[in-house]
Image (tube, rainbow, N blue to C red; front, side, top):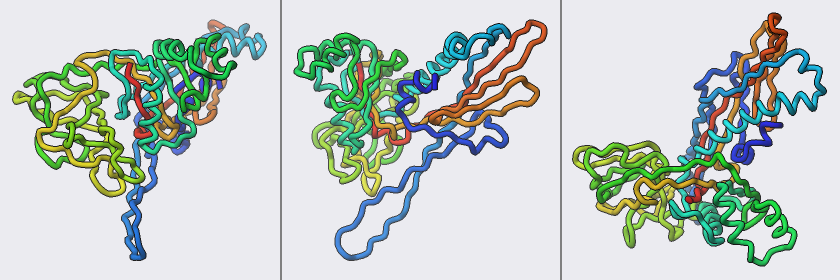
Length: 389
């Protein structure tokens, strides 16, 4: 419970406890495949029009084993349980929670929907309403949306809203705590988290264009970049394609109508240009122009401009707004060895942690280790939106 109460992002996303590895113990690198339901287009009229059932899955790899080791004397065990928990256990578990939370904030690199101007702290109510607008355009359920913002964002928006008409208790709470209150501006919860990441836009360079018409899928062939330049685009960079009639627009995932907003794509790996300025960009989402998984209104046109969000090398803190289904966090059993003084493994709300204690007769101390094995995946990244600062 101490751990679960100290993780901001993970506390609000879906959790998957996997006991499929419990018999032999989980090993680093185990994969949990999280299945996603099929999506259908439907038909009009009486004629039967069967559709293929296409189930997809997202691999969630348990990559990280982290823990804190403690060493205390038998006299420390004479403390009552509350003192022992406060002095010895809670600091260790909070350290684990901070690491898990810090790792979770890297999920921003999987999110392509982005609002705000890199390099500028948002100071207007409209910016946060536009985040909610983007989530609605992606058919995100209205319930359970939350937003996690940086300390600078919180200070700026609380100051900006101080003159708005609101309930006296809400304004009083914001004034006294300096924190945005729950159920504000369409979000069920607001959190401030110092662990949010700062993204640095790639060095860019050149005049990048789409190289070849009718491209679909999870990569985009481009040219016009500065030649033979390393890491022109960085993992997590966001861009749009075209303008005017060539603008590649997002579509609503249910009715597949263009929303009027440019479809944003996120770069999924650092990419470098070749000697001729060509660069193939790995992207998410994959470009799909028809069928149940359609996400754009048209294919990119040849020579359409690549418009990267933010100036070259701009450092921009990344807040996250999301529905719990956007991401998945998973933990699994670790082995419980024999021949020790104490061993236990507990699961609380999908968060699994193991504790092993032994006794050192030479020092009258009891070395104790705590471990958790975990991983993250973006399940429905369209149900999340970044807020640049």
